[in-house]
Length: 190
Image (cartoon, rainbow, N blue to C red; front, side, top):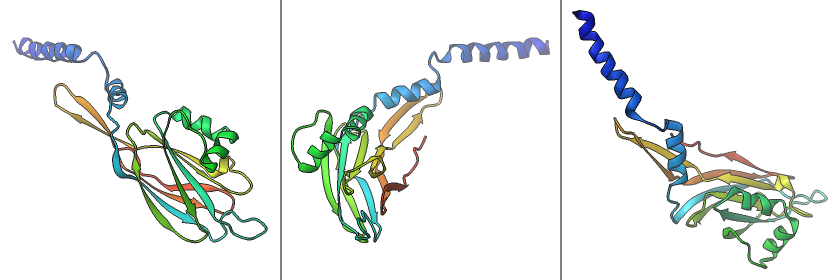
């Protein structure tokens, strides 16, 4: 009698678990990320620029450096720009139009003068690239490619629904004598 009483709840639980979902949790998260909206957000990109006193040094003399901050929807677009010296030169010259680049911001960094840039995130921006104009020409060590962080949450008890939204990007960028680097970037929340 007792085994029969236990058998029914166990069978019901197995039935409910077997029929509950056809898509696993990881796939649902990917779907939420792919379907998230990417609206304009004022000041959603904060870059704390920390130039060293010997930034962009040539013959032991520090020099200023123009920084390009590029925004795009696809990582491949920014990778193509970063791998093409002709396009980089045109961007520093302020000439031409560039397919897929949603926004270009320019800033002149001075040796030893820290600053914080608050940049508007354009609609549909998912990636940011920073290219610093070190002498004689920017190389890979003068470039960064950054993903805009995503906040992922789930709602519901029986039927969980995943939601993904872009988070503000806050990062420290160290401009050294011969290279730039990310010092800090918040992690994605899940």
